[in-house]
Image 1 (tube, helix red, strand yellow):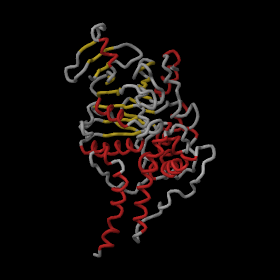
Image 2: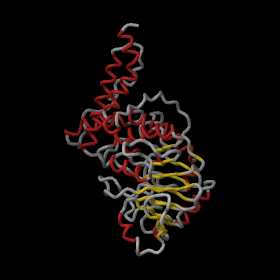
Image 3: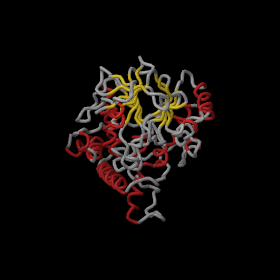
Length: 394
């Protein structure tokens, strides 16, 4: 075989390597395999209870806090490699916006998905309102550094596509990722126009970033007796159908349902924007409505949500039927200390793993504290407005 023909045969993998080299330094030389062409299989909505389940809240472009969350739960080592065994992880959405490391986090999570599967584990990333906003072209919460991150990524992507053009017989339907994207954005400062253009091209429906990292995300998830959703569910959402919502969102992100997101993703009562069960004051939460909604989902005991920052940390209200896990950890959105929720199949208790030293001050004043012999830290039994146990990692 001639040298040009050999090069052409290797172009698809070279393209992937070019793009992934952009985030190579974060992942110890890890190069993601080329993602195969996607077949539109149904988004899995329901799973049985795993031995160990970890839920992680909003990450908002903060790679360092993202890694801290995984380390807090004992899921990665100091080299960011998966050591979580068969643990199932749910990241509740809002990887995008407010921070500078959005694409790096997307690659970080996809890397861990590959590693976890090899150990019998599972990582599920969900859609939050900020994923939906960005696919919709709403960039109100982007940072200048994130615009530059997208500029660099698309530069590598375009280099790869130029390589494809040198070869015949290579599928190059997506060569022009800017088709239909304007060059000028009235009302936006001129120095940000290039960043906006690259971000739209990458994240719009059927874009190279949205198609690779967002289209496969569920918007609603049921694992065992826990329902996961970024904002919250109402009766009409359940009646419309959880699987139906997941598959329609997938189709929209893949460019098969028009440019604008479905109505149940927009507005204050949508599945990714709802705050009815996330008010920090327990008296403001509609516990009666929540109880009726959970009763319509077979086996559901609780709804686990992100979206609304909880200044007190991860907590539960409505007799722990509403668990709120967004602690505002991103330095672009609160800069709180990481916390994650742990649910073990053989225990009826919910445990919060936290790095917050505020709980250490209660070591000698709270008689309910007990030592967990299996894990480093403190086990703390606490009343309503928190899940039952807290473990503080030093």
